[in-house]
Image 1 (spheres, rainbow, N blue to C red):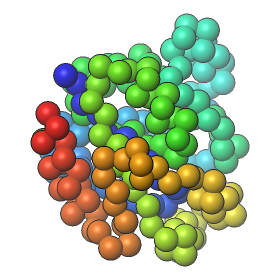
Image 2 (cartoon, helix red, strand yellow):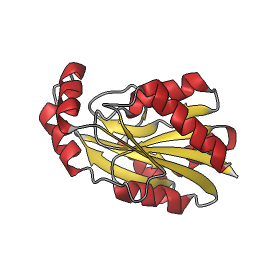
Image 3 (cartoon, helix red, strand yellow):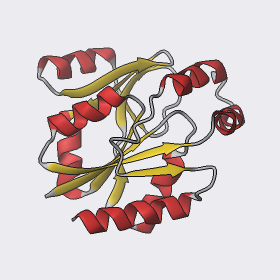
Image 4 (cartoon, rainbow, N blue to C red):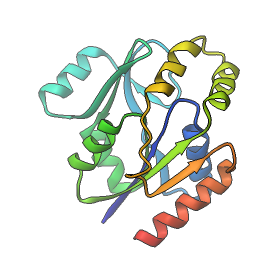
Length: 178
């Protein structure tokens, strides 16, 4: 059975940092970079065009799509299927509907769902330190991110759990569920 990890949480909760620690812990863990069309950060994404996204849509190649910060973000079926064949991909999501879309679209994968969060004030400090200039938008997204503790296999508060400890907890859980 293939395995994947969904790190679910609001902006600045620590998803990127935990992913880097997972990748350092074992080379089987790799970030699954979403497709992105639009403005903003490019690191951690596969940059594409809206025309390419539309072509994927016509081929039923989109598992999940969302729009935020003036950009379109897509989890694509061909990319994720290829990544699952070789690694344990780590997906970053902030919408409950996205979690349902992924687990429904690829049901033969054991998805470990990790609710990653921190207090809003901590997130605000982290967002400001990034210097992306969209603090208000990211805090709005933070406010709109629903807790999923009832769906999560693990819940990690990054205010009290270091990224290394979080990665080790996730790795341990992945190893126990097969």
